Image: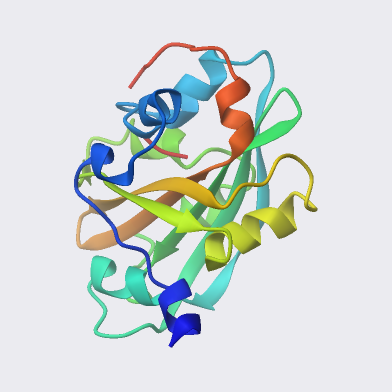
Length: 195
């Protein structure tokens, strides 16, 4: 039972429900493009793609993207890196029935930011943000740690946010896990959400 609970997160509609520190709360509620804020908060920003392939979604993701149960989806994971330090682990899932007309650029993103396409496409509709506290044993936190090789500070609780985007008939869910190093960035512009 414990193993199953680690795969679920208690997603909340309000950031205050996850009891983040004031600086972390500020990052969680960044309006608009998180990428734009990270660029404004650092001298050198880059996206480091970890993978993009077919995988089984997490249990708490299935319902969010209209699936009755966890099943194979298209999955993309990246690190958002500022001044050489990973600050956000971003995880995107797209249901298997989405086609190229729903998300035409998804398969060709490479190391480009997904946010750079989501926020400038007039056909994309953004849902509401949800927020969660993830334990260090949550699958996404474990993947983030593996991606950074255990480097950097670790903590027992990580804060995350997620949002469903719609384009035509397609759904896409982006989850962003904020790593401790994000708090060392300057305030930056709180410009307009996502990887």
